Image (cartoon, rainbow, N blue to C red; front, side, top):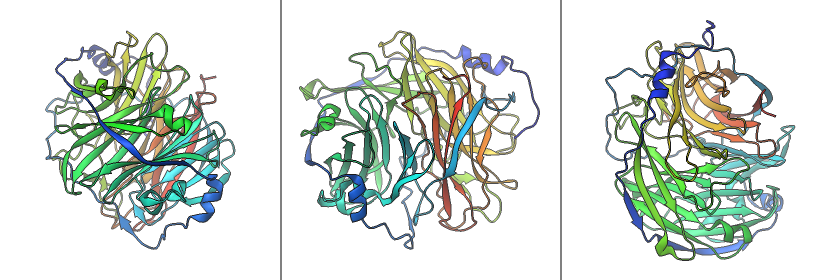
Length: 532
């Protein structure tokens, strides 16, 4: 990274970020009367440690590219204004202490790996497309794995048991001290397969559910979030797996699923917007009583993101509402690969192919936290760098705040574009600890000088607004990706330890050996020195 050290000063660019606290414009629609989806089935499983032995591993010799579904017609998202919050100041190295740093699941014959993980009271679970592993979160020792993802539904019957489609999500429900695991069935009839552990032990028993998502719309890129009243889901609809018809916003009955009772899911369809994904609750303090869940997507301009409010009523579904969008003004950005159809444009050294940027969406997770005097949500996506960089990709990040707790009115408290003078930084994930420190993990690559690697940065509240400290390299790549249809990542995951609410765990893809389907993954934990 750049070697020049500059003082921690409030730059003109940071001031620009502060001045862009524009109140949202309230032009929104209210959808009422959600579609109620009853469960197809629920049961309680055997312990996962036993089911794992009953489920064969997927054959890693069979290579498969996950379809790169095209999405809605492209919208050029290129601004003629230079990025006003592109970080020019280089701060000292990020003020963290590294803890664990080890390889996770290696290539399983599928690309991209959909690198995903979460940390619980004693364990870390990484789920990479078709395979998961359970680790001791203190030592990194493997407790269970590798295991096929459909082992969670061993003995359940139907397509949840027989299908192992990938695109998984695993989240530790911090208040309930339970694991939420989910993957969709990507062949008709489409299903949402969901399991909630009965304890904090990821290798124990699970309350398992199947919800039918219909026979016509391929449920692509599902993302879940934990909230106090429900488990929220967003995914993209593709009619017959070909034409995008909008997105679904759903809520599953968390109370019933924690109890192992019969449960329902409620869904709204947004036909005119791209993916709308839910916020995921971090920290010990719950959202205010009665608070809706907040969902987000990029707007149709280069200076806005959209927020939605999902209020669910499982007793009287006609009272459920999905409201939005409210447009939140953000500093101007330009979308990477901005012709709307060609996403692969991130370079790597020869003979590597161009890598997928996924710059047309906000990236998982949307981490929410209630500090009592304010609510905060951190978001991130990939953009073109600003002046001072010759790289292809940089990472835009935001901290939204509501200072009127429970009002639902969020504005940009701070934002920045984290960039390097020569290296592309993309495929980000972001989270915040109880002290207000922010951690941002990314992939890093450059055409001549850096094989695809794993990097993180971060900031503490005393840093100038909009500034990230100097990055740390988690693992430097030693090869490049070839002949894998340009696919990369699809997402990574920055999660926060529920025990101390300080320790971050980040998992991301990188390349160890040049070739096709040679991806590897890394798991790294660290904490800021001021968080206790």
